Length: 315
Image (cartoon, rainbow, N blue to C red; front, side, top):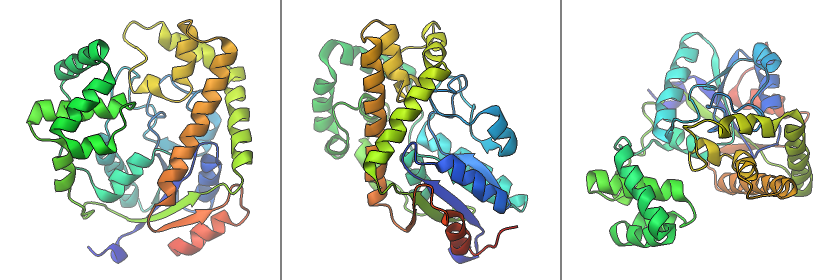
């Protein structure tokens, strides 16, 4: 089916603390939309405050799909997200409604738009061995190993990114084929998408104002009980700080505070800085994003702009 004949799906992207959820709810109140979360932290149960998960009242007003679908001890890959979100989109379209994909996990939006290479499932034994090697030798040494067996992936993966570095080494150990080769074979076709993606991004014009909102929101999270939330996770026997869930911004810093490695003030400072860095990375993604319509933070005409571009009038 030609893209022009497909029903629309709205993709609403933007950095953390830019107002995506509020705008999504405004859109959903004027269009027959169903919201689907595109956020790698919101998938985890029991991680509510630090992920800025919509509260019960908000979810009652505007239900979100793909939240609370994993325990923090579990992993969730971009490939799993793509399969799940396509299934959700198909169901929403079949009901005569419009998928509204909202979030800041740019890798998820990327694999949705471009597809993803056919990758092997994870192997815990292999991951455990890689982690043991990292503990013994350091991730810098493992990055050097990756450069030898997979220079394409090594060029794109920073030595300080253990999650991606582990996955690249794991893929090579399991298949004998470099991750970079999998990327090169990746199909660019999006023929399996049930919708034509209409992409929008909230782009803050005032970086200082965004930083102020980030600081304010982190402090509000602390007032709401973020430390106690993380303490409940910290006291579980099956979680550790190197899990993808516990590497989420805010959670990692509070975990290190609970370990005694940071003072409270250091934790607050690092949590705010980490969130600012996340926003910077998200904006870097968006600067090169194709076919995206920019929206302003809190813009009065944002909803009208979305409606006009997708060719709908409000209900």
